[in-house]
Length: 231
Length: 259
Image 1: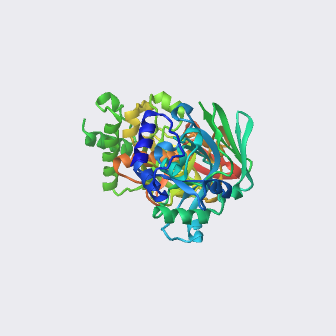
Image 2: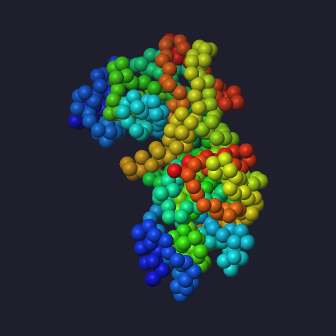
């Protein structure tokens, strides 16, 4: 597995790879590489490429997913830990019940405990985030780190997500663009063979990822804010 | 060091209301050994017909941690015999205690099993059946509260008794860090606190507890109560005192120490 070895070695050596290569692999194989590269107990998943525009750019008709590990949940962001960090404003949810593979969107929705504001700190191993679908999937959907808010919402926050870095607005998008959470969970449960109570699912971003720099990040929605320091 | 011997000493101090000298000066060394004493004492309580209805978290404020020279909280067991009930008012004989003090905090009623070591505060919130404002009586079996970390851990995290206000689900969608209360003694406001004083957020404390218990192979189980840690400095008590906690939007509870 050349792709697996290439990513593993680059991650270990903390260097970037040139993307856009043909590795002779399909998406299913890319997901197997993702699982092999990032072992250990999971605390959840992230969705990527959730908007139709982003999917079109990659020539796909569904989102992708990555794995979330305990060490990826951060209290603050140390940018030196990442290769080329970018940030996306997100909404995440935490499950209060298991979701079996094959559950309907309605059943999946009822398993949601609460929604929380979240930040996805992306960190692709592929230079300038130029990658093929196989490359981004194998690289854990560019998963780097996550910040998860503590204010529970009983419903998907309404309106827009607005992200500020050092007082300047850097991203904005409508929560509606994330799609129906029940459908997303039903789809994900099918892909990963079921989801467990207590797991977190980051629902993806309605906005473009923005390069990260030091300072303070503010994510606003419904008059509430999630604050994070970037050092 | 024999955990059993110290445990019997603590039990005797509790029953006779007679404080004992610090255990830390008499061979108790290390937090692990202190938890062994706590466990041995709990076993003694259980053989006498008591039971454990949940856990309490202590040392959740930075100031108290610095006083004791530690950088993390501790935990103890909530005994059924010292559960003063759920509701707005409760009464307890002052003479039940040795040197009681009062704290206000938030109680969690666990709805779904929480097993560490990777429990997040968000998972705690999603797994909690309800929360309530609560009053804890802390007490020390150690003379004059002269405690090191080993002493308070062995002494069941200085647990005395507790009462819980009416359980609520709607409070769970509030930002618990910014909830607050005012605590009155005999009608006079003596202190106030907010959720952020407890490790930044009360659910952080419960997640710490679940993850720490998993080192002992133990989970937080449905139906258990967790007293998540004080939001304000503890207050001294005299016989006949009435303590009233008035929480956000007027949620109130009173505890009367009958003389």
